[in-house]
Length: 465
Image 1 (cartoon, rainbow, N blue to C red):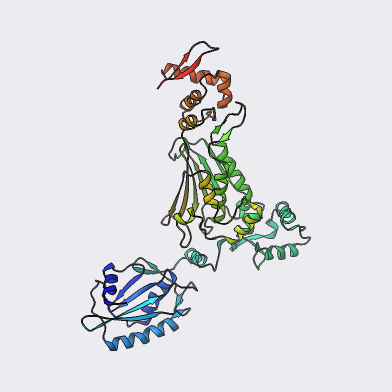
Image 2: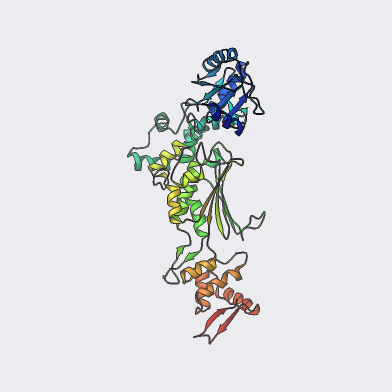
């Protein structure tokens, strides 16, 4: 490092990768700085540089003393020991700046000699205090995963039929005859702890009533009228609990029953094609259930609005993952036991990292928001308006207008797509009675929004703008 490069670094100021110190004399203070850098992304400590960016520098005697201090701290005050590089840069004044490069740790977490874990927080550092944060740190360092956490459920809480079918279909193995054999099998399958209780993965996958053991890990789904959250006004709501396969199936069914159906050339009585492919929500729901942060005691929330569908998962993206990286197919396994069983056919699975790309391929109008402060990851699937669906398809749209916040307005684009339809046909398309259709049409006529052209048999409906 030459003087010019040193000056360019000092101008940038302190941040999560650069720390300035006019001098270093306290071994424990230096150790905490090294630990903080090693536990994050590594960094550089400039000794002989004041907090304001001035460079008082060091004497040659200071350099000898600090070199010895750095060697002792890196080997004796940090666990595990660190390989810290030192470099000196001569100033124009004749004094010296020492540059310590602390690498990103490969044996995280690192502790100081008092057993404290330090992390960088901007230009400062902070200690890890809470049990939940400590667990998450171990999780991010791949030394601990939430799905292997022990629960209070014994093997007697297993759904015998579900687990029996899984053993038969995947392993061609019979259900064990005794409780002791069952416990050993579950331990060998990473579904139970050494103490003989089900871990979190075992509960979520195969417990008979997971919601009795872990009530926070459910899916809460709501269909709101319009495009805003209402405190009391909703069209459909349900909480989905049970083994993870049941939660997935029920959540997917909730989404699909709240989507519009396009007939796409089929007969009027045909069920139609969903406005958004089911494959999109298969991929996104699997991703939410398998990759959510199970250290956060909160449910997955599924919100359906007129213009979008939101899937909100507890926990932001782990480690160095970003929205751009997951769009390209990158992934990071947060719950490896769950992932391994999903790959065995518990849920629809097409390979690690491929789900997001497949969902985007089938429906590009998807946005992702990674909220580190709120510890949430939100997927927003944008819907097309009824008018757009009608214009693009040119065919009838099946929509359950009964119970909607504005059923008369929802009827207009259906009539646009079926201008020659009689009352009976409109009732079939919308799923309400002929009497209801007649009542809605009468109101539209009174509002001068609809008129009939021609006779009852050969005429057609004209929607007035």
